[in-house]
Length: 98
Image 1 (cartoon, rainbow, N blue to C red):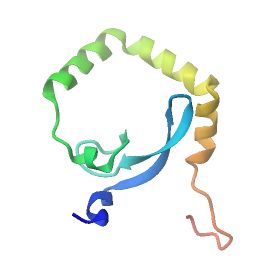
Image 2: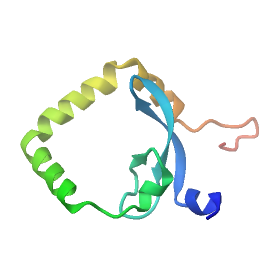
Image 3: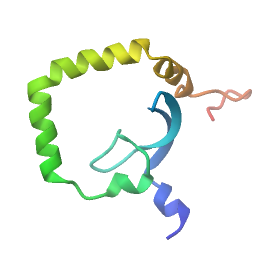
Image 4: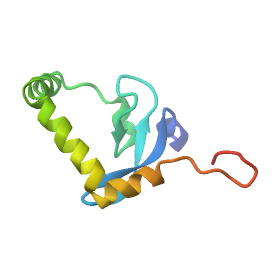
């Protein structure tokens, strides 16, 4: 297997991990489209049905509380505020995006 076969269907992004920012992969196709993963191979991994059902139950019970806590973290955590600028596309001098 070649590197370009693994990296097809993903883009590199910055993510929050243990209070710092790390490079990860955003899935651009498939069932996990839009999710940020540590490994590009996990974008095409098979689904675990029992885990997805458990998360659905948790979100149904505590979804509002999760949303409030997430919003608070994204506003106040220094790593989150750095992330906003890191993941914005930069422009080259010619006007092209990198």
